[in-house]
Length: 338
Ligand code: SF4
Image (cartoon, rainbow, N blue to C red; front, side):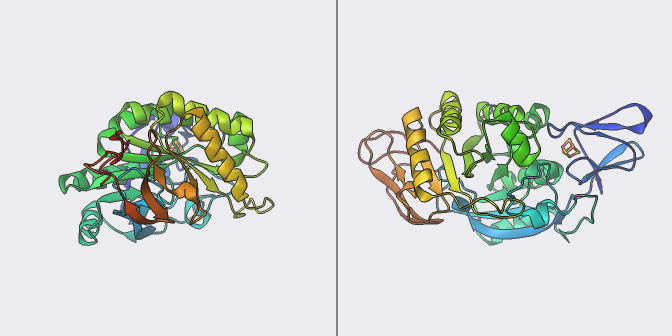
């Protein structure tokens, strides 16, 4: 156990954790909503520091991050636990394992060892992913700072529920983030994941303001968030922050507690892509349908095909000089695009 950051002591040895927007008030002996931060005699401990439940070498496209060092490898890690309880979680076996204060499982891996592995596998970044990196922030930050010393970047794949205070203290270690925006309807958002919508919207804005490269993902779920009105609102929200933020609209498949809804029809995703483009977004990608035209990057000015993809694989990258369209010279948004 490692003493946590981002908490305040309250009366009667209670603790207020302000790492995420649940802002749990935790009595002695108890854990917060995420199940991995425990109040022991008035001190808050991270139960997952140094305990990795998953470590893999992934293409950065799998995060998905399409405008961040495309075609590179990202050493991807997670601990158990999550501050959301999504009905459709694809990684519920590791994210929800702590529900009911279950056992903290994972192998021992220090920040130094993670950075060494990332280097050995020639990864250009470390991704904090699969579960929610916010809930293992102390571990992620110690790793991320060491990674920077070695010229390795850091990306968060996150639900965006980090508090502004925690993000202000962490952002210099984070180079890129893919943030999930699960719904634009407060009730639906709470129903899907057990958390409020507004903090997520604010953190998308703040990540961007702080200079972290941001991409947004919306899993389009039939009968839950697939109305034209709602998806238009999401697109307009992103455009208002920056039309250069890529939006990934991905296909749902029945899983975990949401098995009574069908897969998202491909035509729906293609329609959502049009909604995004009509709203003014420069880059809208369809996800989970390998071979779809919506996986490619096109120049937002002249329409030239710039990056051709098949699933997570880059088949061709025509961008020149780090960020330029070879046809019209438009500056393509992103980080180290060639
Ligand atoms: S990080 Fe965990 S303990 Fe802290 S506020 Fe969020 S859910 Fe609660």
